[in-house]
Length: 109
Length: 127
Image 1 (spheres, rainbow over the protein chains, first blue to last red):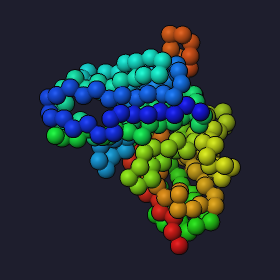
Image 2: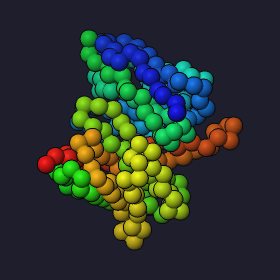
Image 3: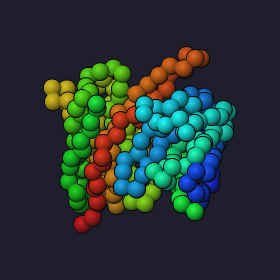
């Protein structure tokens, strides 16, 4: 079983700042198996990044994903007001077949 | 545009069976490009994959649900269903219907991710 850890648990930033969110796997994973999701308050999650670095449909280019091995990063280049949310990384192919990290909350400083 | 609409009881008693349905519109449960299933989120907590079903009818479940789970599709109605037996308070959650697309990467690894989500239906298990 591969466990995902996300850090920090909370990130306090201002609009316009850059955010870097970390997702670490307990063992080496295939990079493509990593995805990122955004969940705004009271909303279902939304796919941001699949295959570690591919933006999903209609996702702005200020969102980017990177990483390999055990360490993956979601970067938001310039925070917009609508970006304050919880972000989850997700992993395919482990046991259970799909798992999620505990999430990073990005809130307004 | 694919839309997923969950429905089911708000309150279920412990030890009973929870039954939820999801109507898929703008897409088909018969298509091979997506698996259709469920993800849940206990109040104030993170996401947990419940399971999904392929167009072939093969179902994949989270082992943590230990044989209590059944996922099925009604192809004529484009409807997805979940049955979770012997529920306890630990099953209290928002249940999201989801569609999992898939891709093959440059190294020929196939992977899935959830690109379609319903708004969710809240279920409380309590006597």
